[in-house]
Image 1 (cartoon, rainbow, N blue to C red):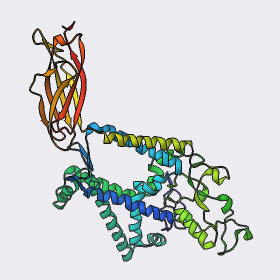
Image 2 (image 1 turned 30 degrees about the horizontal axis):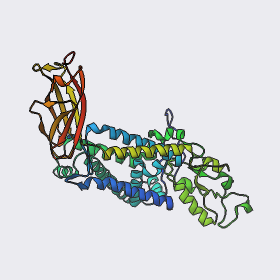
Image 3 (image 1 turned 120 degrees about the horizontal axis):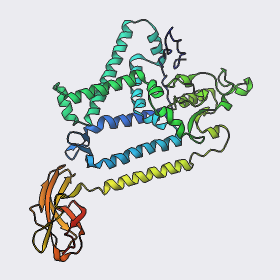
Image 4 (image 1 turned 60 degrees about the horizontal axis):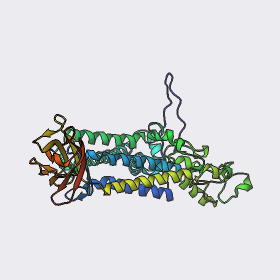
Length: 465
């Protein structure tokens, strides 16, 4: 058995036993192909997306100094935090939905820790061979071959981790400029720090910590059970069919020798990246990668037995009880998820890249100009969230004879700029009665492409006219 070894006893006076390194065997099968596809798709998006250009700028760029967040044709500003909040709620609800439906799908196929660990394991196999060869070489003395293989592996790991850190920073600093700075050995202090930090985190987590992150550092492993029930699809060992375990020749009927279908080959343990034995039941260390299903199906094929000794199933189904994968919980989660996604898409599609705030002057609530006119003074803050500058026309509306008497009728605001404008609004006293009246400011670009309105109050002397 190469995937899990019995921990050594803790040294005298120590608190913890030493954790043995796990050497998971390579496995082939339909779930392994799905994991490989997920790795290529997710890492392809991660490493290639910063290099894509869109309308003269990087397609996805979170430009913190300029406070602009480009996502293809959309540009968001700090004032658009609402959309980020909705996106985070959708992500959390998606985790609840898929966990209630089929357990730890996120952990097994899409978690960054799983994805990068798979890549580091591929490089380790390329440099040092199969699991048994790696374990034997690590136990043996140092030699020239061992040193060269270790150096080769470290070179691949460090290069890949460094490129990962560089790509991560490329989402926040234009990656082409960042590349030129690195070629000239002149990265900014923060860019350099985050490249090293994120690269080192990838190197340590995917190269050395691996399953320790999933077992001890990830909080999801601890609270996942709160989202499980007896109808959740989980990776299960069919104990009624598999027990009692025992070795036998290929083609032997289990019943003829008083055994179950499990031949006690321990391959399900050897391929497990966290080193658990799925035959002991569901454990929080299981990340639902389904490697044990693939290898067990392969063994069953060779023995001439039906597949599915280890399979995706529910607790109720394993006990012969009725099971419902689609149930009220999944319908509620699914409906909420679809509703939030629809709301986010609608909000983004109807989003106007212009914001207007109106602040009445608090020093002088109103000013009587002459016997027939009253003025109110306002400060208008115009935020142009478009990707190009606009010249805006400012118009007061909603009161008879209302007009703007300052020189603020048209103003230009650069892309992403904020402009504060003092606006004096005059109204004929004879046209109004009462102290408070609704007034609306309308700001519209001269080309008519964007506009915004803001309602405020117009104050009159006591008794009005």
